[in-house]
Image (cartoon, rainbow, N blue to C red):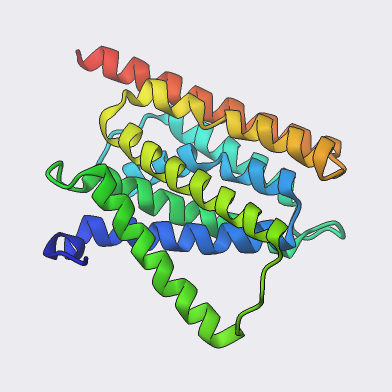
Length: 230
């Protein structure tokens, strides 16, 4: 299965990033509040902008840089390091965002000759290896029918989401694809509050709003920048 294309640096970056993202998202969801994790994950567009500026040579103006800084300040409001309510496990979500950024940059840099389904397959095979290692180190447990149903549903949703996210990132208009990410925050808040019965405070809502508006402003400035070039 691991064709020579798997060892192309961009593909390796994408696959490693996806593995990091999945592992730390699971850890974050297990140990931290669902609403907090959903909010922190929305910083991905901001991190992609920062990486493009620092490592890919993309020209990023002062407006976008300030928006990125303000967005990360919103994250600090959500996780609140140094105060009594600080949840150290929320840092798992931060690590997941870094992995997701690696995945998206790798998807963007991967040769177009490699299909989105093949990139998704490489990621899936990596998950199998990680799962086998975890089974060997932690042992296995017999799942109930209910747990098995949840697991199958999760696999189907995650596989479909990974495939279509990769396809959209490679072939879709960034101005159309990027805003769709923020719908996850809405669904995350709804699930966290109404299904998981989590408490959402003012700092959480304010930090989430800052992250979303900063991300949308970055997208707006990117569109202006592209319009000026054309």
